[in-house]
Length: 95
Image (tube, rainbow, N blue to C red; front, top):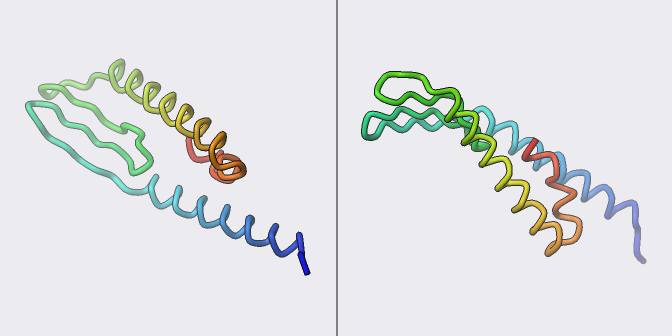
């Protein structure tokens, strides 16, 4: 017998897991030093620090973060078209 409440419980559990993974990714940092450029980026792809030849460049950092956010939104939109409810489940990840 089909139980819609069981399905909702499974979806809620998946959403909780996705949110936990998002929190863990936000806490992770990757540091890259290459050709005089120093970048610190979080696991959820937000640039936290950008130095070029020892100088901070917040304009570039902000522009790159905006580009990453827009690409994530485009990917989420495409996934929601393909996977039905998956986009809604993960909808808070790029925000």
